[in-house]
Image (cartoon, rainbow, N blue to C red):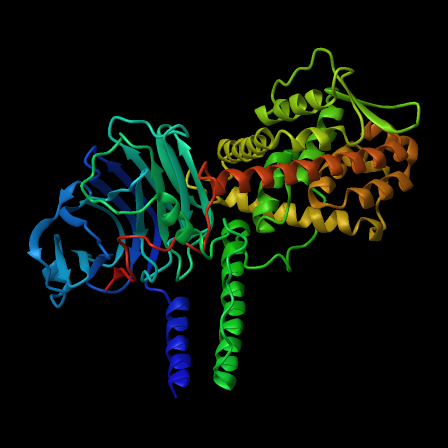
Length: 548
């Protein structure tokens, strides 16, 4: 019977996941640590409320900390602090007011919604003793965004700084748990940033290790940092050996319970995918988009690959982008292709290359390739793969810079807003990108294919690299007219296919080197990805929050 009740409760919770209350467009948190280890926190909530009378934050499990100086404002108007908060008051009675509910295990920070619709609230407060003094280091281990919010935030960012001391690799390490995103040190601060919409059980747990001498906190914990880290890594993607199994001793009801959650997960994934497609394409599916022969994004492969990666939820790899960029550099004369005495393809570098009009990541890739080529400055098969294995951090930084260049271009061309939201023009090009992929896949089936499109053949091949079908498209184009193919893509059909194979191997080497660097740096606290699982042993936070 207990298991039956659990299934019913789970179903109700699942419905709550789907039928959310309003929208949380973004949460931006700035946390400044003073020398005594107190956290001065400012949170900006951009939301659209459609129910409830108030908004609240859960701060429990304080563990030697206290909360004070709570304030709320909107549009520059400061809310009235009423002290102890009365949850049962009406929407009108709570308007323009804020207060605290004191509970046995912590507090709830509350303020009145005032009205339904759009709001931009700024809440600030101090958590005393947030930094814990350990035997060997000091640390901050806080849950800053709680799971179980009334609606799932679309974007979350957290910036943590220390008074008078820039945080860097010399004095700080950081890990992030509870959400999918990135953690990194930037401009003297530790930054956490989500890369996808939160789930019902998403949270933000920040774990930072500080060298001694930055803080003088009286909130002591008689442990060494490795003891804290070991517990936090349990169940995380930082620690691949963590056990995730569960005992199977509840028989039929446990089986039904597992099946229920499996089906529910599929349902939630379908809902999430449709919403994701809608935000990028303006339509809930790629299925009904017709093929399109027009080259998308005016032929810009950085923008095209960036959007294709978004649509594929990261399935597109750096291998495809690097290969496409190499073909573009061959087209511009920055690289030339030759053959060695064994008739294998080799790449030569222009003596006076001009990268005018190209994003910086082109020059970055060119420089890495040239360095990998050795003293003779002729890049041969497998040379780049060997070089990348001993330069993983540099390769990883190049991957990051290529994404940053793509984002800058998307914004400059008015395809995307500063917050990452696609404009209608961006959605139009994204649909064109999907249609262009279908066009290239169906190229052999088109009766009208011919040489009248030869001016676009190089674009066809470059975008085919992004889509992972360059071999197929190269063969189809060369079958139409081998001579025209050689003149258009700057290589005969056989050489072109060898270039594709070689650049694919180089691209895979980039992907593997980048992944290796990210795993190494993230696990050692130098920044990188965050882990959805793990993070145990944190203070603060709790469950719930949002509209009530």
